[in-house]
Length: 539
Image (cartoon, rainbow, N blue to C red; front, side, top):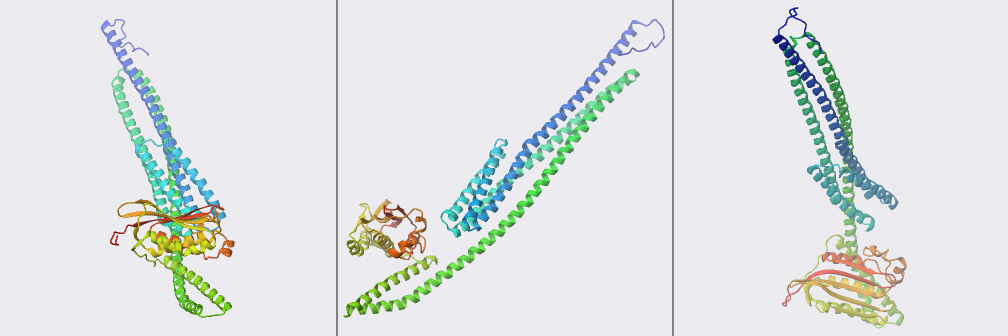
């Protein structure tokens, strides 16, 4: 630094003046040194602040935007899965359904991977709760979807599958999508909050820097009048620092503009995704309306069929009863052997036709929800005896052992529809004898659980006959279904008995099933709950 010039031009300057000038020089140098340190510190602080803002925005881009993009992609894939699901339930071609199921499985796996990527990214408690809500809603939706798919594919009951899809799966799908949308809304709020926080911090930092700079300039201005050359030197340094600050500010503003452009692009992408979701929801609503219309038409057709069967059954039974009556009268009279054989054939054929008509009438009533169960006390062991006795001649003629096994703890008097229960047992016992050429047929009644008011009973009919292929077992309880065509030709039957039995058991709030293997016989069983009858005959 330069010295002050000699003010008096004299060689004799007092020691006090020299010390004062030295103190001034020292104060000026210290002040300007402090100002230099202050300016350098402000520059470094601005550089650090700019670096902090840059890292904050980089963290925002790497974390928050990544989470938002994962959530958006997962929601878009889930929407595609929804459309694939609707196509599955509207298709009837198994090959196309298999392809659609494979496509949906692939999409579901992608969603599962995205959820796995999201899990380590979430940090706040509310974010974890929203992500857990998504996982829970997806689990509930997938369970409902798999249940409806089981109706459609494995049990081949398309109507029930579509009904479950409409009534149960679709609302759960909407809840699942709503969970995703809530998560995305939370991420948007976090992004906006972080952006506002960084902007406020940056503005406050600029204000602090400006205040400190003004204070330094005010302090320097007091000494600028003392030494012009020192003031000029300090001004040059101040300009240099100001330029550095401007450069840093321009760089920071450029980065902010870049981040703002990225935010705008992301918002546009989100708006486009929202438009696609709205279109998908509209298509889904249209598909739901069409499915409901198809279900309504199917219900009308089913009701018309049931009414037709009921009316025709009544119309056919009237002349058939006349034919049977005349045949019984002819059997009571003396006839030649040939005519008696023909009359016997007429009687047996009429009885078979009447049984078939009664079965059709029962099926029509069941499908029309017009079959009502009676409730009356009856003797359970006596019922089993009455079921066994009519089949004893047939069992002896085929040299088959027909037996009944009753558990010791079985209640004797129970309350229920004894006629329908007899109908079920007669059908199962008759089938056992029909399809058994050697061995035995056993009717068992067991008590699974009971209390003072009621008991849960298991009825089963076990034979040592042909057995049933596991591949055809699921369709046996459907109307007009039998194991194969050769069975129908050899043993006869309409395929209605088991279907009616299953409906009757379900009307009794029970369940029915079978256990069988080819060549090892079969066991048909059903479980129902029957109230116990009091000693006086009432429950």
